[in-house]
Image (cartoon, rainbow, N blue to C red):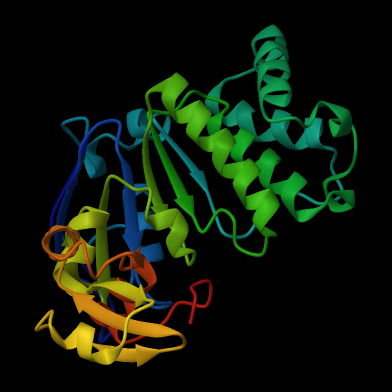
Length: 300
């Protein structure tokens, strides 16, 4: 679906993106992560055709972006961190004006509006001004705007920032439903690592360069350890396991490189592991290990 090769972009002496390459297969949920200022928005703007690259190529469905911008404009939908809609206009008026740019008018507009309003549950406030909506309601409308023209690629730039956990879950359920129905490819950037954890593939960038790439499981196995919390045994018993350990409240913490080693240790000592908990490494820990920085949406 997307092939990015040796992409670079500078602003004066600042190298915002430096020799970046990655591939996003069709239909994937692709996580594109980095701290603020890492170059994510610059890459998104180049993919969307809003910004020219200095070097490198972007191919979407085999088409080079710089030579096929009009065609690709109709294939891409984007949801930005901050709403691109007009506060004084109603939801209906906002969507009507925006999708006219894609040639969507009349009955085609009405039918698609009804479908999306029903699917994303904003039928009740179609004729309400946008500036009278809650953050979650505005987000539904933003996503509907991006989906209106049936894009093959959906770019989500921190789509749930500032929303409460319940609303984030609702928004993500909607995105996942539409993604499956429309067979879309999704590129996501987020500060919530539990959202990144459901991606098929992840790239982490820092100062415009790729510093890590893999599935969530591959990244966890590479950069962080799993832990076994063992309870109900004394230290002499823990010593018989011949593995590193440390005390925790009411028990012992045993770090292991990955889940298969934990499983092997537990199965080899059933007399010791009566009361235990296996704690998987988290994407928060991966991000911290790779960048040296915690994201504001992550767990500290």
